[in-house]
Length: 200
Image (tube, rainbow, N blue to C red; front, side, top):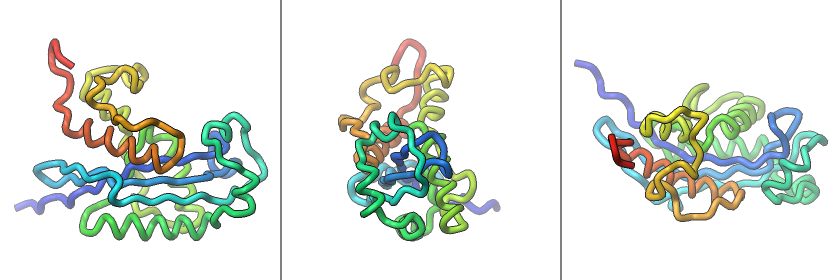
């Protein structure tokens, strides 16, 4: 008899950065919120404000893209003085992920996941040498919606989604605010049966 799979704990993660790729550019803040748990028979949404993580980091290089920095509104000069050391933050984040996951396997979820996962995974490997999510433990909410809605991935935007799936929270480009907002979106997507013929 096959053993049941381990549950998954989905953690919504949002990062703010000062450029398009990690290494030459820096992750300036990270926010995370527990979205919910998937057991063998059901997904259970969590209160996304109940278990959260937020830190602001010291930049790791002198390079930045002004337009990228403007999105978050973070003060890079302040972070150079007061931001936490990336190594300390990533070790703290990894410990938090393991603690909230308990017996479940943690899965990062993002909207879209590709950008945030690129920075998160690079920083985890660069500063801790390991990832609590493994090398592929991430889920993209755009892909999840595209599959359920039977839409081409590149046609997906929040504006194309039924309003009842969206969080009522504002997207502020503050990493914790957005992680919480996206945790609600993720739970709504997980509960949604998908696009039915003639319905939304």
